Length: 190
Image (cartoon, rainbow, N blue to C red; front, top):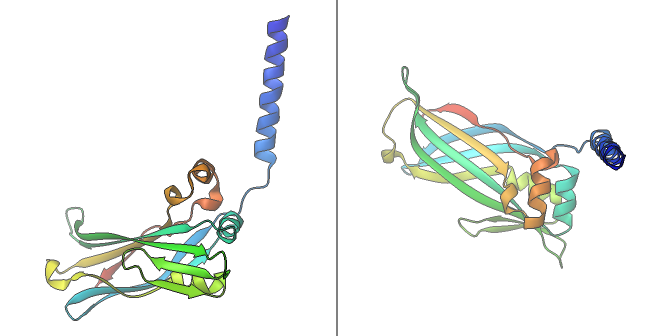
């Protein structure tokens, strides 16, 4: 009788957990949409401009206003488009940007981790708009890119692994933390 009793209790507990999991309100998912991207040559360097629109989840906004730094990765590739084979990657880079709230001034700081450039904003909306507006980002010398039919691709995403360690497992299972633009591709006339 004890084995049957334990089995029934285990089933009831499992049913309660599943009910709680599926009846809980779903978290608002964050999103990034790249609206415009352009690559061009200036002073023999390939440069990129792009605009992105962010939708932050409530979890991400709460974390940011509580003092947790969010790190965003910008991936850029340039490849040679080929008709009968897969595209050949000629150049790839990853840039890292952090967005954080300064504890004393309550202002938001956007930092390019490659150059160390810091831009300070009075509101979160201004900081997010600045993060989504990249201008004159140098990539490589044009002479380094052999090929005529070039294609550029950019992706901007939240780096979940850069969150504080106790938050990482929750961030992996919560849709509110999965912010990514996906790859935005276009033919480049360089």
